[in-house]
Length: 336
Image (cartoon, rainbow, N blue to C red; front, side, top):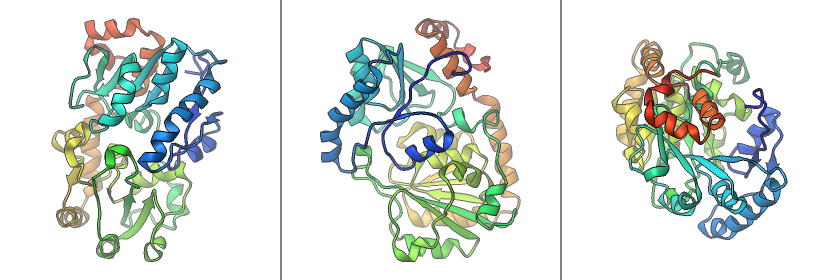
């Protein structure tokens, strides 16, 4: 969009590796602080973050505010009398949706999103992860294997633990006996852990120490992904790596269900023994990566160029809404 002459202002709050990624990208951005980890902290900090964002963007005078599941962007756009567009793909984030949907102008979701958000709702045939992991925009860098001392072809498993701090994660759960799981998996290959939270001493030695912008390259070359993170499970699947999502959330998310049922790129379990059984089966399957590459190619052939769609939609907004309603197939023809 910058190449097309758009002026873009980026704001960000601290969440996992978000600020590290932005700093390593070389893009200028404004830090707004953190919502916190507990529900009480989030409630207290929400109006403060809204105010900080308002102060940050009021002089910039944007025409449109974009966000992914953002609460502050719709609030600030409403206060400024501007338009806002939000990406959504988490059906279970009902508490956050109550706070943002009344203020947002347009809501993008994948076709597979469960539920209807009325006149504001626009569906596209893709996943948000394709915006940055489609082969047009992502080229795997083999040097990541040197970074971790791994030879190409030698099996390794990426294990992901999340913080369970999001409001939609309340009451949900993932992997309970982490160390036993690691010990069993490492019989079939090296185990590398990425975690949103501190690890116990006996797990810390498994933590992968690479810059956050190299993690997708690691996922590309991994033999298997297994973890509690839905986004990373999707990223692995889109990259052609066998993926197991272990969470009580399971298939409450439409994109998880579609990647499993339609494309066979991902498995989802809320039972850790069943997940382990599937992991061992996959790790014992000869040529598993080639099988997944073929599944991935089929998925890519059917999905749209999400980046091109986003740019076109914003560039032609709000006329793009009616254009898409009149000709839904238009989204398949767009190119950057």
